[in-house]
Length: 127
Image (cartoon, rainbow, N blue to C red; front, side):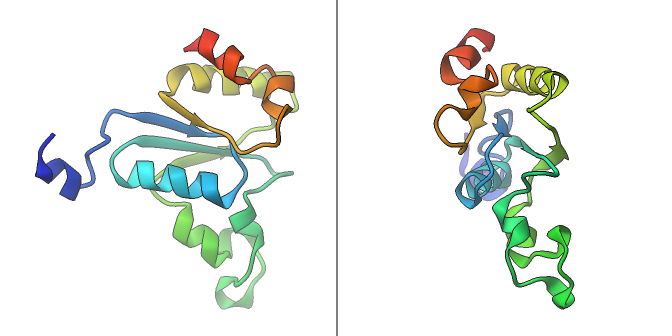
């Protein structure tokens, strides 16, 4: 790695990061990884949008998850999509993404990931 890699945002090029969390801290971690070149993917669901999407202020005063100022500032440098891990097919997709990822970020309360077969020991077996 050279100083150019750090300055150009490619210091983490090749790293694959997945965020299954639902908090501002997890979003910032993923943003920083993506800003420095990692391939970053964020998973949300319609029933549990990221907390940054549900906090004001909203651009133009229009209350909409995609217009939340905090979301526009922090949900960058990543790919994102909705996935419901309460359904078996959602869990299967999440497991495949976890197998792909070098880093998995989760900020769910204790036991949530384990109940879905996505706990630390489950992920160690996948990757």
